[in-house]
Image (cartoon, rainbow, N blue to C red; front, side, top):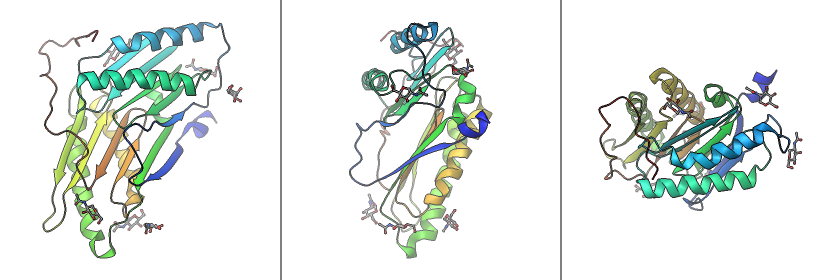
Length: 255
Ligand SMILES: *[C@@H]1O[C@H](CO)[C@@H](O)[C@H](O)[C@H]1NC(C)=O
Ligand SMILES: *[C@@H]1O[C@H](CO)[C@@H](O)[C@H](O)[C@H]1NC(C)=O
Ligand SMILES: *[C@@H]1O[C@H](CO)[C@@H](O)[C@H](O)[C@H]1NC(C)=O
Ligand SMILES: *[C@@H]1O[C@H](CO)[C@@H](O)[C@H](O)[C@H]1NC(C)=O
Ligand SMILES: *[C@@H]1O[C@H](CO)[C@@H](O)[C@H](O)[C@H]1NC(C)=O
Ligand SMILES: *[C@@H]1O[C@H](CO)[C@@H](O)[C@H](O)[C@H]1NC(C)=O
């Protein structure tokens, strides 16, 4: 029964020009209920949220575990380190304010998200999905071409993100169908997922945005992966993180 309840509680909203970078989507404060004050869980959660900011893997992924409490945060792959840190710091504060006593929670900014739970992170993907779409529609005469463009874009992005390796699973790309405007897209998974888990997460996301095929843009966030496409450039295509370290151990930078 738990499984049924957890599967895809869907939060939706549509956006137009009103959506700002600063909007905190969700937060979704979980269905596992509340913890009682002065329990181990509360102390563990305080611990992980306090230490989280110092666990950057060097590519904008943060994770921390203490007892039963697990927390993770991820910045979009094009976000520079200072802005990433600021976003995660802010998200940590926001989620604590808005989900003060809940066992698990997840919330998304446009450029980073945060989640925590007492469950293993592998099962957290079923928790919730948040999606939003541009309320403006593609005209009837363009819809076939638009959908083909979006489908081509998403199918190019998916394997590139999933195959990104153990530190960073991010892809961004734009395509311009002949005689049409350019479509910009981005996909990302938390890097602790395997290539297969990342693909599954993104396939799920793609199937969920398919019904939004008249919209000029859509974004979909899950607790371990997300995607977005728009008819304008929304990511930084000029900035790249430092090269992947050659040693297999993640660098932990306190910055
Ligand atoms: C959890 O706490 C919130 C905020 O105090 C309250 O609104 C909610 O009813 C509580 N839920 C449960 C299951 O006790
Ligand atoms: C954080 O994630 C990495 C995989 O990216 C994993 O090896 C490590 O054990 C995790 N650390 C914690 C504290 O959960
Ligand atoms: C998480 O907390 C809920 C509520 O207390 C409990 O039912 C569940 O078994 C816990 N899950 C884990 C993995 O500890
Ligand atoms: C866009 O298309 C959807 C689905 O056909 C429709 O419900 C909606 O009203 C349209 N929006 C606008 C702004 O025309
Ligand atoms: C758009 O999505 C709807 C619902 O999934 C589907 O019935 C329709 O065929 C799609 N339209 C195009 C042009 O792909
Ligand atoms: C996006 O689509 C709108 C509506 O059709 C159009 O007015 C606008 O010029 C497009 N934006 C770009 C950057 O092509």
